Figure (spheres, protein in one colour):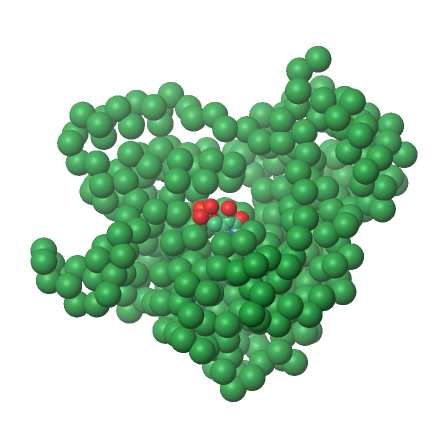
Length: 357
Ligand SMILES: Cc1ncc(COP(=O)(O)O)c(C=O)c1O
């Protein structure tokens, strides 16, 4: 029996050829391929600008800087996410303020945001978790009312939509990750999207030593550039993204039809296009389910086993346990959903899950 993996990482021949071309061109870093990848990605998202960076984490760090977040400012986000969402706030010496999540979408609960706003609050960072947009309508309304910046952590949500609009083009900036397990990859890599020219210009300086022109450094910058090797892969991967998203959506539909009577299947908020980076179910019998998945050689993941406030980097901030997050970390489990699963694979997954109950 073949193991059904939770992830699929296959680089196609077009990307291999494009990488070889870059290697032969001698232009290896932030050259013509990066420029083309930025143009293609901005057009895909419907954003005016896209700035490529070395990964999603450096993207969040730079986006916070470019939005003017600084020492002592407070940034509202959720604790139910990957560590980098929270540590990026620490990198700019700001304070993460964790707000609980909606129990159905796993995303920032907009109804809890206003109570967390103080006179130090400068930004809201919704996480579009698992491939589904946060409730951006309400979040943008609140941001406008209190004059806050909105940074979308879209690292898991390439191609996801909120009411017909692609994530990354809704807030003041959006950040994507191209780590190999994501719906599209560049090896390591990231992209920041924005409709604000000033923000885009600042990001371009920040990622490249604050360098305006050769040896003219106008601000304190970093080396967070993307390589042309990565961008060459990204250009080809972006062409595959829509096909992959459609396959993931149809796999999710099938699994939900087969499993909704035994587990809580993913909820898709009305108006959202969920692109299923993860297909995450909830159950009170997670240990039994894991045992059955292992017996059937079906991979799984638990995203996330701990809330961010339980990790050491956040110990000096408010670590009050948030009830919905605390409950869901015990119940969530992600099943394989990727584009390379066959109908037989899906049926094996269904069997493995059903056998546990
Ligand atoms: C929600 C979220 N934010 C940030 C990141 C960081 O991205 P990267 O791994 O490219 O640094 C990731 C990716 O792993 C993520 O899933």
